[in-house]
Length: 127
Image (cartoon, rainbow, N blue to C red):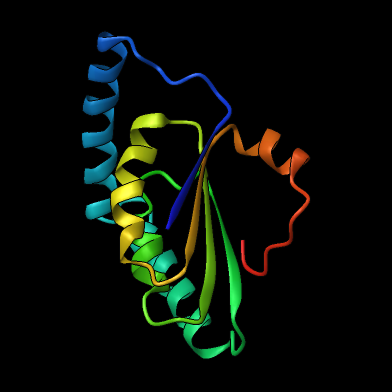
């Protein structure tokens, strides 16, 4: 089950959405080609989660975007709760589809992650 929390106002302007789509395509190319080591970092994350986290854990994903690399890293781990936070409503819409692959409870929150962390009261085991 995916629980969606909304705090920020979603962008509904079509021009802004088109800019997001264009920028997201560029960002996806950066990730896909590992120009900024996203895939390498997520490989380390996966290795740590599989080998060192031996008990069930709650995962907090700050600036989660579409969550695709993180969800891939979480596959087959002992994750019991995923909480993704991102400011972008379109990115969270993509994340909503991606997190369906997880076999745990999921929470997606549209918020600036600094503000969300200031208000956060519940614990997370891995951030």
